[in-house]
Image 1: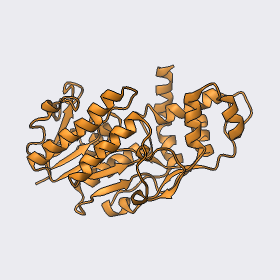
Image 2 (image 1 turned 90 degrees about the vertical axis):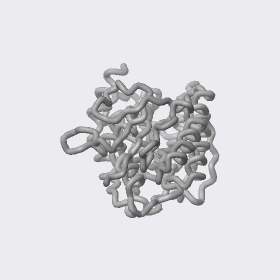
Image 3 (image 1 turned 60 degrees about the vertical axis):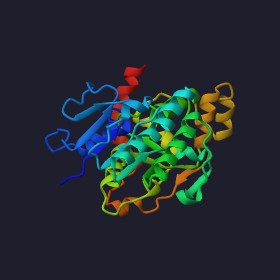
Length: 311
């Protein structure tokens, strides 16, 4: 009998792609998949959807009954420190406790490489990097990781996740490019990137693999992307008009001196955030995809439409 799966965050960016990775050939959500949603009416009528909220631990009672695997893709990202702690830290703890009570065999948590803080990180394996989160969101997600790992679960740490539904990475890079009004030149730093569809397949495989993975794993495409190449792809793919000649890093920093948020993002691109693949893709039998250039080209129409809607 197929294992019964509970997915949190199934209406979100990554969780939505995890649900898509599990859909039957006819597009239906299999009966063995249960979605934990704050609003079960939100497009999940074809699935076993339960109403619960990570911010309300009491609402989680019974959500894991009869479940074999939990794929925990939900998180709160934002500036509200209390809410991020409530959802990501306390909510994950309550979910893991409920999973343990119900006898769930495996919990997989989608975290983030932001738990390491700022780089440089060059071809860095997960087992050698200390946690040094700098934002309320990354601190709360590091705390969530601990609850999952203490229960013998699996933690996946992607870095930059791109694809349909992304409202953070590529839109942020586009905003940075707009603030510069120019391309970046000569920035050799490398960034780990993963297509959300490949990440979704990895999440499913981590939950269902016979190899029973545990611990922490980096889940990015094995080949990092140069920061200048990353910015050029976004500029060209979105058809951004940049009137000024290309800038080197020092010139870019000077131009952004009065824009601390953009300067913060530039600082990330200035150094390596390249996280080593520990063989996870091979062990769970998942293809990491075609690489950034082809992946972004496939998603560019969605980003252009999103940019039009957001402007």
